[in-house]
Each structure stands twice: as C-alpha cells, then as structure tokens.
Length: 449
Ligand code: PMP
Image 1: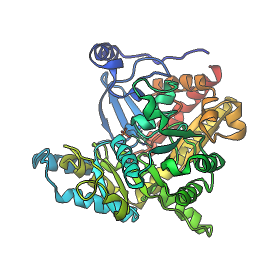
Image 2: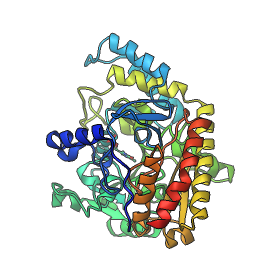
Image 3: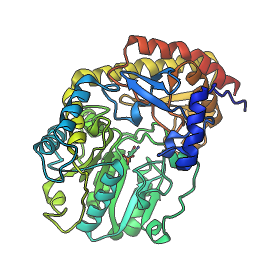
C-alpha cells in the first residue's frame, strides 16, 4: 500500500523531535500521535471558529474539534469572555461555588433523570466513579463492557477498548492486573443474546453494564434498534445497574444527548423508551476546559461521599474557570446549534460518499446524529459495520492515504479511522466548501492505496 505523507513544515518537525525527548512519544494522549497514519503530528499554536493553525502558521479546517468539546467552534468569544472573567476572580478555591450548582442544574434540566450530578474533571474519572458507585450499591464486583467501546483509561474498562487502544491494535494493556481484568466481562457490541447468556451464567455477580450511548470510538457504530432498551430490561431483571456513557455524545448529538434523541424516536414510534441508572458526561460539558460529570437518581447518587459510603473526591473538581466554560457553552448550545451541526454532518457525510464513489472506493459512511465516520472495504460497503470485529476487518490502509491527502489540502481529520469526525456550529459555508474541494484528492489517494 502506497503511503502518501503530507509534507511536514520544518518548525513542526523540530517541535516533534524536541517533544519526543521530553514527553513519552511526544504527546500527552496517544490519540494525538499519528500512530496509524504515519508522520509527525501537527503541533497547533491556536484555533478560531472552524480552523486550527499549526506552529508553522498553516491553517486547516478542523474536523477533530478537540475530540468533541468544541461544539460551538474554537475560542467562541462569549465562552472565552466567561473564562477570562472567572479566571480574574480566582483560579481555584477548594470550596463550593454557585456556578457549580448552576452547571449541575443545567445538566439536570437537559437530562431530568440526572437528579443529582457530581462534577469531576475528566471522562475517565466519571466512568471510574460510576463503576465504583455501581459496585458500592450492588455489593457485586463484575462489570460488563462491550468490545470496541471506550470509557477512558480506567483499569477495569481498558479490555478490548476502542479509541487509541484500537488505533494501536493493542490486545490489552500492560499494567492492568489479572485480578482487575477478571472482573471485567467483555461482550460483542449489538448482541443482546450474548448479554442474556452472560446474565444467565453470572447474573448475581454483575454490578453494572457500561455502554457508550452510541459508540464512536471504533468509528461510528450506532446501537441497533432496541439494543439499549434491551440492556435496560436485562439489567433491571437481574438487579444490575445500567451506566450510559455519554461522555462523547452528551450535549453534542442533541440537547439531551443520545439518550434524548433515541427516546424521542422510540416514543414517536409508540415505544416506552428507557432510562439508565447512571449517565456519564464529559467533553462538551466543559466546552474545552476539564469538566466531566456523572448523574443519576438521588437514591443512587447520594451513596457518594459525603452523603454516602462510596468515596470520591477531587482538588480541582468543579473548578471555577472550567465550570464557567462549560456553563457558557451549554447556555449557548440551543436548538439552532444542534440543527446546524446536523445539517453540516448531512452535507459532509453525503459529500464524502460521493467523492469515494466517484473513485470507486468501496466504503460506508455511518452516522449517529451529527457524528459520522467512514469505514473502508467491500464488507463495510455491503453490510455496514455493527461491531468491533467488523470495524477491525476494514481496509485501514485506505484511510492512511485519505488522511494525508486531506491534511495536505488543509483539512484536519482525526488521525485514525477508528474515531468519529466532529463538526461545530462555526463550520460555515466557506469551511464546508474547503472540505468538499479537498475530497476528490482524498478519494483518489484512497483509491490508489
Ligand atoms: N467515555 C467515552 C465514550 C469517551 O469517548 C471518552 C474520551 N474519548 C472517555 C469516556 C474518557 O474521557 P476523558 O478522555 O476525558 O478521560
């Protein structure tokens, strides 16, 4: 497979050389490395609206959006002003603030089942706390997760994980003990029969099922109709909790996340809908600053310290500057923002499909609300991708070529085929036109790979 590597500006290359001497692999999160596409990661100097700028001053239309948080686009003036005002009042107090209450209330307004909300700093902390809480309230130890789902770098949740673990094709990770791995049961995604069987065999040991509301860390692989509801039914029958991980989808695919979107559709079709026991949020909830959260009914959430026996804490939890960013972002994220990102996703997903078709590249574009990604190869084209095994079987080498041709043309895509593409409210006609203009070159490179 031919590799089309974009030319790396000299300033960028020296930054990467220097970084590798000071930071493992030169990056502070593996997904930022160009591990599966090859080449030097772009070192960014600033960002505004739909654009990012590298250290050499090159401008790219951005389809990473900080891996989700930048729903409004980069450096939205009102969000930046809120952050500056909060910073001037003090960076961190280690005492409660009213703004934290306002953020918790805003989350509850959007997702009423999150009666109580605890703020943390990262999605990893949110899922880590959710499984500790589930174990605490059930007195059970086993956690069920799905292959290709990613929930952050929690020991118990790294088995067959998506995102960077998928990109690096790591079977597992060193440093996770056998004892920890033994308490995680990994099942194929979208397979309710496998879940039924696991509960038949080990139902009394299972504390919780954790699932991405609509997975987007093995590429975008939405739940089959009835899958999430089925998980709700089975967990309830066996006294286990259902944790819906909306770190990526929450407040991005709609005002109430994937849960809101899916339930609206289920109810429109005469169904009852479902509500998990716990939700985890991150990314958009901080608008680009470190805020994440978990929420659920008072009866469960009040088991957290100091009201309950399950300990959880954080020096920077609910940090006032970070909370100001999240609150400003959610307050600006109205229906028009969601309508816009949906329309942008429509336009782009269609344009990508047309460009690849024009070059005879077999593929499928899968969508979940405003999230989408491309899978390459005849199987994906013929049947679509429903689980991790199918996602892994695609022609990843085509994405490598596609990625570099797009980068060369000034479009910043996620540097892995296993990640979703993120759009924002700032992606206007001009930004879209630039992406659409770049697509034929991307498609030709994918075809030649
Ligand atoms: N859950 C999901 C669904 C995610 O996509 C991510 C991050 N991509 C996480 C949890 C972990 O969040 P963080 O990187 O903030 O720890």
